[in-house]
Image (cartoon, rainbow, N blue to C red; front, side, top):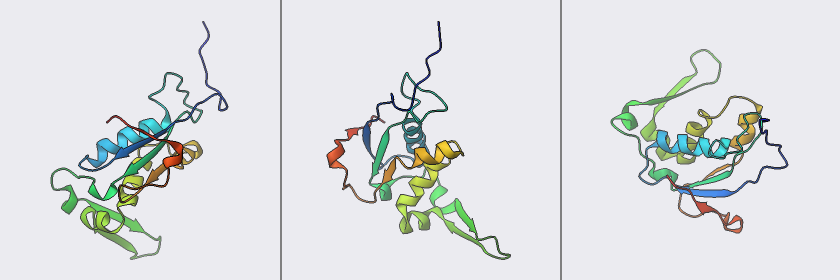
Length: 142
């Protein structure tokens, strides 16, 4: 019996929508990364983009459990000496809630060209409205 390997033109891609309201950031990101990668499908092939499109709404209502919102830090560095910047996740969620979810999912995808391609299928929105009604997204089970 031969092993089945999906071809890029044979993969059928769907659209899913998930609300981040009241969900822990890590669990949400792990589930979204699984769907973006295509590991939920029986035809999953590691070297082919088998994943689906995912729309995340209500990004500003995502949860961080415990004291992580106040104690966990986000660091950025420009590469110049003394240019390290640090903010708490509480501030990060207030400033850019879309980026919080995007960065969490990005860390759970492969760090390759294929992973960057998978990340383009993720859409994150602050509120509950999104402009992708024409794609008829299905609600994603969480």
